[in-house]
Length: 304
Length: 279
Image 1: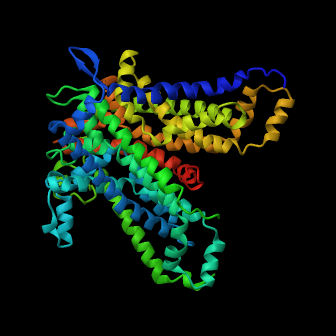
Image 2 (image 1 turned 90 degrees about the horizontal axis):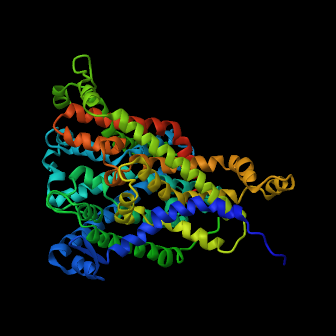
Image 3 (image 1 turned 30 degrees about the horizontal axis):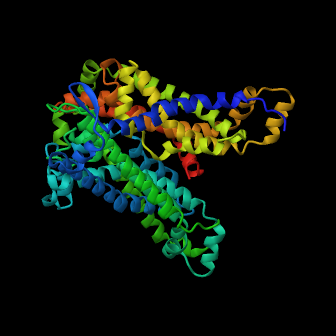
């Protein structure tokens, strides 16, 4: 083989992306994990090993907040899995029905909340659910259920669930679209073959379509997981950095923000903040690994 | 056509369910917008009524215009979004071209390295990002946001664009090489125009999260001159929380630009998702 020229153009093509990505994403990610091993005493940084994590998991002042945020985050995720994804799949199943009129219109309208910012969504729902304005109570009154009304966002036992449902309202468009795409890619011949065997309507959905879209359901599950364990904005907008009432809506994102940026009288602590970020990183990594190695490889993919 | 599939009762039930959900999806937006045009008294008395001659009022919008610097916020958001998208598309396409076109040592590894960021959120590294931006003096500049959003958008852009670039015919590129075109000319003149639909998809996917982000503006650029529309409206609403007219008007003004963008790009967005670009 001849001596090869160095193909500089490959480096030129790769350089900008690799540089920006490495400098602004990968390097800070590892630097954050490194910072979690330090603490600050008299404005000098000293190495303390895993001490911050020990504090986070076992020191009662920190661990109580941490486990509370983690538990809340799991509840937040569970509601998305149990409400958002089934509704998304149901809507997609309806929309993908052949010869349904106005499908494009419904699809675009249902997707609108997804494009709105958390600021809009958070405040809009806060106003609507507010007992002061009274839209929610008067609407419940109209159907005779006024007794069910409570200031949901202000009650410890309901606030987190209410916010999770608001988030579901906002993001149901994403599973809907992805499942819709998966349903459209099912070849007509398979459905027709089922029809000949007498499988139509709802049973066609359960017996033919659902097994075929399971890989897409896996993808929306992991997207939901990563999105939820990284959530912050909605809680911050509607309940503030303190995630009230009494930390009942605190999730890992708000906990990390409060810790590293500080709030009210507490000073920010970047090192404890990094430790929380490290814990979030581990949780997301575990979730992604479970998906990639435990679920995705075992899923049966049908050759379409 | 099979009759079993076209039961009129079923069709009606399907439309009923879809209409019900569409109402749930649009109702809050509708309530906010109609009430932003009403007087304070009618906002409370009849929140669900459309504004009429008697209840019509623009007082909220006047407050917003007087008190908030929404034009500046809007301009900041626009600059950040447009410049970040331009970088994501240009750098992403270049890297995708290198990965899909050339065989070199470490190609697969480089692809995997760039794909890491698809699943790992950039927010995890916030503490170190802030430290870096403070050290380089970029904090409270729009550049801080642009760099972060560029890094955040690149992994998925490279992934989607390299899938599409593999489909560009080799004959075309080789014909260019025979004609003596440089690799750069081949990329910019021959390949880029052919992957334009994929670029549009990537742009639309990135646009909404960048425009709507609250986390990074809050942490990296909270100064008055660099506030984005999302952060600006959050702060404004927080201050005017008892002035319902102003809050409702500010919300409506924040909804408007996104809604306009959506109307313009929704076809592209939906085509992008349904064509399987993210499978």
